[in-house]
Image 1: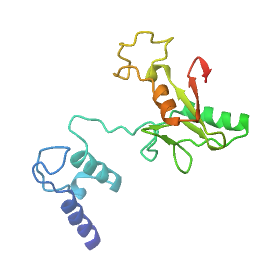
Image 2: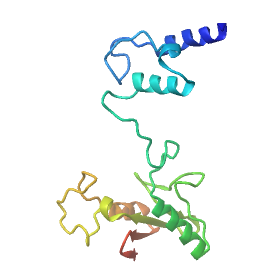
Image 3: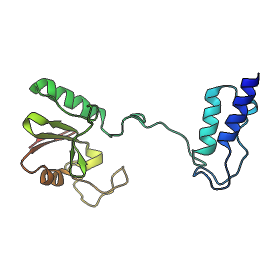
Length: 174
């Protein structure tokens, strides 16, 4: 029983918040009483997260690819890179590789074949506004941004290396 009371006191101390101390809320509180407000450790942790970290009126949603993969790469790109590597008998560096995606200037390539100094990019029509689906340069995409075509900038930074650009629906271009 003493351990439970010690845990309760420690949790209340850790979860206390002064006015404006955390970004989630401006409200001050004296901590979360896990014995009164939570039935399990998981519910106590969730209450702590909602109270001290989640902004008011927001729903905590785990990102599609989870929190552990810092590189944002689609499943389509990962599957294509795996297929490309098997089909061409090469090793393709991707977001799931030990070093993550290959950096070229300020950009991260979806795939990189070191032996050939070859960059591989998969562009989704909706995200990068392919010319066939989005012929108007001034259209605002469903991603709430203007079309971005990084290929010319990546090519510039690749110097003598080459880049193969694959649009999700329309095939590969050199």
